Amino acid sequence: MARLPRLVVANYPHHIIQSGNNNQAIFREDEDYQRFLGWLKESAKEFKVAIHAYALMQDHLHLLATPATVEGLAQTMQRVGRYYVPWYNAKYARSGGLFQGRFKTSLIDPERYFMLVSRYIETNAVRNLLVSDPLHYPWSSYPHHTGIKPDSVITDHALYWALGNTPFQREAAYIELSRPSLSPAEREAVDAAVLKGWPLGSDKFKAELQLRAKRQVLPAKRGRPFKKPVEAT
Image (cartoon, rainbow, N blue to C red; front, side, top):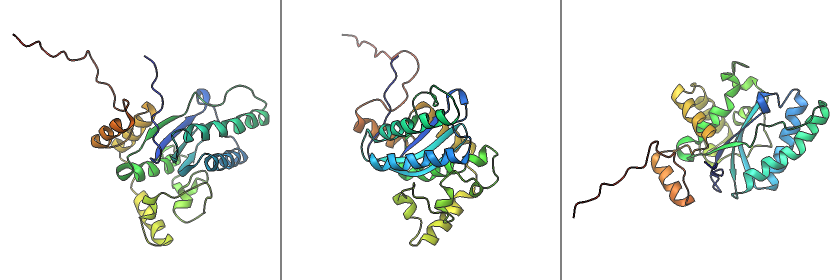
């Protein structure tokens, strides 16, 4: 079966994941993370993509981003790759591809899942047992949202601004929001959506999205199609 193109809708947030080829490292030193973020910032600005959250791990990365155009996400990731991969290969005397195929993405129902996905991304280092507090991991946007370190890569979403009337109120609210660990069901829902390329939202949101996108956005039911019985005449 032919692979469906990525589901990308302008002006909606998307969860993006990109992994290293064969789970190899895509970042080894601080300079690597810094270079990637620099090119991400430039590329996102050029193609009108707002980056709301990120986490750069040694062998994969997560982004939460809203494109202004349908093509913006792919253009941004392609531009970053065109700069970062040759630079990385030259630095470490390697050749060939660095990333495992094309990036994966899941369109997000903002009202219901935006904050959940933001927390999921920014606590990734804690779940991977790299740190005990997300504040101690330097390569995520969590320090920005908690007021510790402003990050010029980030464009705050309206839902973050709605957490309070002042920066202090927003930062304090976000810290409280991030304290509880995500439940296994929440983690499973986010994982399944982004790995399979399906939207993350309520059934109503998905049905409305399918009508708007004019394409399949829901998993097909397994088994043979149901045949309507022939009525007797």
